[in-house]
Image 1: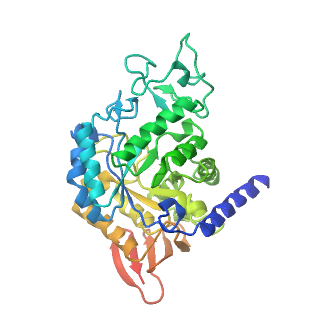
Image 2 (image 1 turned 90 degrees about the vertical axis):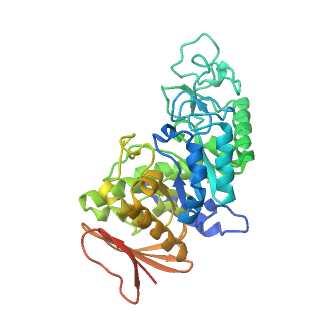
Image 3 (image 1 turned 180 degrees about the horizontal axis):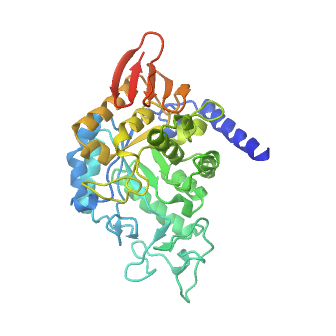
Length: 423
């Protein structure tokens, strides 16, 4: 009973937050009613196309014309890994993706199209310059490493980790004020060259309160954290409760990727279990059903999905032949949707045009991060919902069974097992 009460209170808290946080002039996307659409501007093997920053620069106009308003870019700093997720010298912006000059040119091109660049902030862990923990640029002492890190040393270490451990690098002690100050200085230097916001990597590795602190001190346009934990498909509420708890820990200053929706949606389209998309309260069953303004929906990313031309991480891929059903869902529903680079730029003209059409429908009807959803049906082989935007309504149907909205509607787009109407 107490557990259920807590879930109910969190849901009500999220609802009240949406009601009370009416957008004001200059408000960011996390304040509600955001029309932003995010593009993940890379995949796991992007570093192999050198300089990747040049690819971003040359596609700035295409990105803008597709309807994307933000682009999440890969880690910007020197790293021990090709992909950038083992950061070494944070202040050095020459990486496997290109030189610091290439990066600045890409940022200039995006900002010139009014597309906001989002930096991948990897601060849970760090590797040394020549050995385990000789941190340079910026220089940190041995006490920047958490006391329970695997590093065996006689040097003084810091306090206990505030999150999960990460064995591939040194776990950083965010309780140290000089570490916080150094990270903030680096992040603000990224803002000075054109970045507008942050994607925080591996946030289960340290307390969400520090994300709140870093955002307070860097005032990003947008922020989102990667909290990837195990999902029980038959009991998804604890999973989205963890997302709510993390957002609360940041003081509501960051969104979180909606891994709950991803898992439920790909199971639904794969096995014909569309009933999974509706919770017991009649709302969307993912994080968007509890706090849509701070939920970033997605189909795949560099970790879960494929790279181009083949391979990649592929840890939890969305069914490839059903990707457009997935986009028909997230691009018509609340939350801030994110589109994966590979799907848009590498899977051919037909897929690209289908995604572009869905984005244009979302924008034309004013579907936002907090648009109201009325689920019409959610059963084995079909799901249907009507979403109310600021400039009209959108109806969407997924699945092999037929459905169409009653009244006067215009079929706006359709494909294999999905259709979208407008009113």
